Structures are given as structure tokens and as C-alpha cells.
Length: 185
Ligand SMILES: [Zn+2]
Image (cartoon, rainbow, N blue to C red; front, side):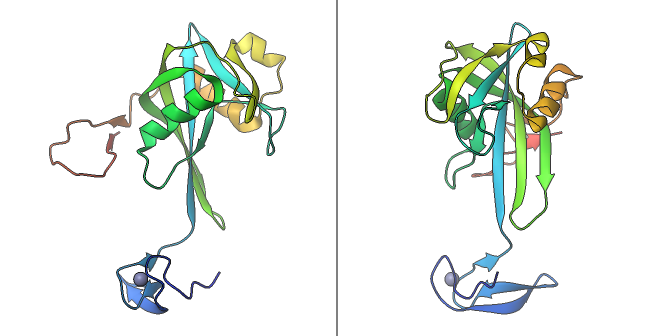
């Protein structure tokens, strides 16, 4: 897709060398069109060896069981987004413990999906009736008889497999960097 006008200030874009690569850049402000990206987040919430799953009530994936999740918002911190998505979809309060998986999809809109290991805090799984029409904590045995989406099955394997201790959020970084979510591997 050609980007002719700046999405920040509306001025004309030009092709310009930016750090050794020709990119579309604004002629009057600092905006550079790096590309099209989207970032999804997913929650793996475990309670007594059972994993929180929801059944999709909408396309894509209507009727399939998945872990709760969604897309990040422009100005919302990522750990708040995933906590909110879990709460909105099925009424469960959970807090981010660590990142356990990352999915990278380089394509027209480059998508990155980040899976969080989350600690269950409170609430009984209750479907929102809009995005999802069923919700609950399920064991591996119970999941065998359920219509679990393919990617979710991979995440289930991650959730029950050897858990990474990597990519923990650094709440007190040695250098204060405002506006950054910093994760240690
Ligand atoms: Zn501009």
C-alpha cells in the first residue's frame, strides 16, 4: 500500500533514506511509516491444574475454545490490556506473572502474539454473552473432548509443559525509562 499522506499531521510523505533503508517519511514532522503491525495478547490462567478457556461466540473461530485474549490498544499498557480482556470476557481477575510464549507472523499486517502466564486472583468464569458464550477451568483430560482451537492447543502444551522463567517484567530497571515495558529474559 502506498502511504501518500502523514497519519500524524496530514502533510505529504516522501521516500527518504532512514538509517540506510529507503522508507516513506513525512516532509514536515518526524513520522516514518515503518510498516503495518498488530499485536495480540493471550492469557494462560491456571487454577488447581486446570486452564481457563472460553468458547468463541463470534467469527473468526466461532464455536472453538480458546484462551482469553485480544488486541492491544494504542495508549493502554500491555499488562492492563490482558488483565482487562480476561475480566471482560469471563469475569475472572488475574495478574501477569510472566511471558511464556511469543508468536511471530510476518505478513501484510505483521502480527505478533504474546502469551502471558497469569496468576488466578478471583472470580467464577462467567461468559460475557457477546464475545464468548461459555467459560471455565478445564483439565487436559476434559479438553480432549472439547473443540479446542489449534493455536490454543499449542498454548495449552506451553502452559502444562516446562515453564520458562524468562522474560519477567523489570519493575525497577537500573535506568528509568518512561513509557517502556521492559522484560528480562
Ligand atoms: Zn507528519
